[in-house]
Image 1 (spheres, rainbow, N blue to C red):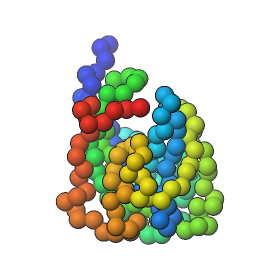
Image 2 (image 1 turned 45 degrees about the horizontal axis):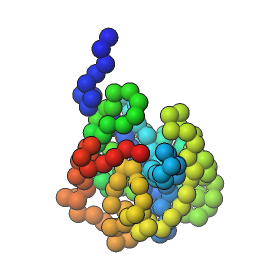
Image 3 (image 1 turned 135 degrees about the horizontal axis):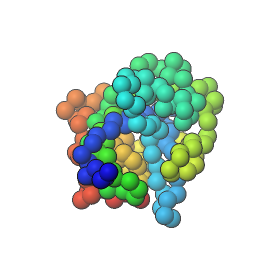
Image 4 (image 1 turned 90 degrees about the vertical axis):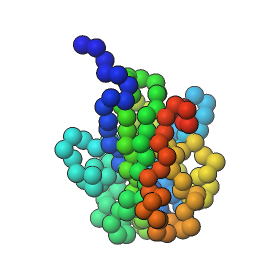
Length: 171
């Protein structure tokens, strides 16, 4: 069987811009001697509803029950990614990033290490969201441009520019 051409199949990935006040939760890893930060989340399973996938991923990675969040997760950004990366034939990924807000008590009960079968262990870190502009963030959503963690966005700004090998380099 021949392998698929790059980007001929598409996966959907859900992620959370998880806020506790002015701070955001990021999964931190060091890869190839470089720092990388990822929004918690993962791939949607075949036939799985989007919000169910977000709930499942946050529970798997952080031990977060979305029922403990303040309000309903808000779809904030959509980004199409066709990036060559190490490993098997890369799929095209459509990233759906939701804003989720939690209180101090919920934050205190989250796991601090996230285990990924391919990327290894990542450590949960909390930083002021405005300090993300200079971080290697994936997906590279404009967190630092938010006026506040709960600021409404113009729907026209939700669709971010696409990512490909000309404007993003996988670490």
